[in-house]
Amino acid sequence: MTEPRHILVTGGAGYIGSLLSAELLRAGYRVTVLDSLLYGGESLLAFLHHPNFHFVKADVTEPGAARAALRRDWPRPAAVVHLAAIVGFPACQAVGRQAAWRYNVEATQRVFEQAAGMGAERFVFASTYSCYGLSPDGKPVTEESPLNPQSLYAETKIAAEQFLLAQKDAPCAPLIFRLATLYGVSPRTRFDLIVNQFVLDAFTRRQLIIYQRGYSRSFLHVQDVVRGILLGLKAGEQKIRGQVYNLGSDDGNYTKDEIVALVIKRLPETEVLYKDLTFGGDMRDITVSFEKVRRRLGFQATRSVDDGVREVVHALRSGLIRNPHDERYRNAQFIVQ
Image (cartoon, rainbow, N blue to C red; front, side):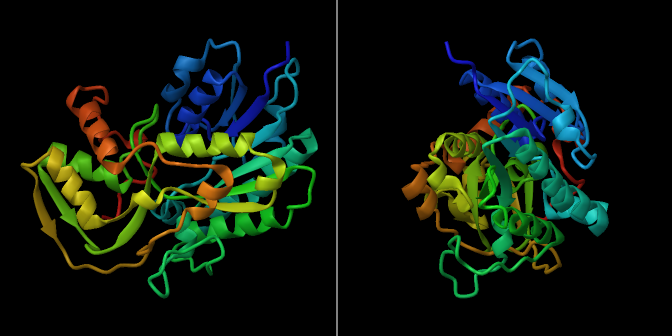
């Protein structure tokens, strides 16, 4: 009987990481989660007594934190999935440039170096499609499109990507996913993301206030992001080493008006107000091509934004999430709509 493969997940208590941990355990992996529990650890309680689950509270910026998290009676991790970060431009603005750089760039370098030292075969990194900023010609952006960061958050992710791509010939193979905007429910749901936030506002306030009305963005269900990461862990090394993939679906490219229409379909009593306001920050207005991830990794999204809206409405209406305005459901205390 072969021993289960071991995966180390940084930020494993978060929006993606908690759901990824559940799916890895279900697939038979051993899972070590390293997380500072900035937003609490309730998302991991269901796994605590699982024989293949190990949790360590630690800060990824601390020297040797990933190495120190390992159990001595388990094999070294075959892969590291690095999700720990200050995520989103509001959160990065709130903590400031120095802290954002420490957590998003320097910590990535440290964790990668520890992964390589531990003998991990691959390093999966969660980046963002906000690296592209605004599309210069209106055409869908591909992995080869120029990067045009509009926020501190995007700048930190690009710097981390550049470090990892410089390590593409290292024994530990780096793989970068530029994630679309996420939505849907996970063990640690976020309500500072457009789809989830719109549903929450429509459900609790019966009102939506919309800025940047015509802007287009790409959206992907958090469960599908987890499926993409699992494909990245299983794919042949030649398909992932030093590769960048936009992770999302062509069907997930929506304008804000289209998102609003899907929310109103489920919550028709909602009043919609539009405001003309420009401001600094993450001014994404792009359509993204996901042809590469579909062709090379066989990725297909299984859920639509309509599915996600229905799911979040159900979680709120049924009381599964009792206090959705609690700060633990936000990476920062506000969202730009």
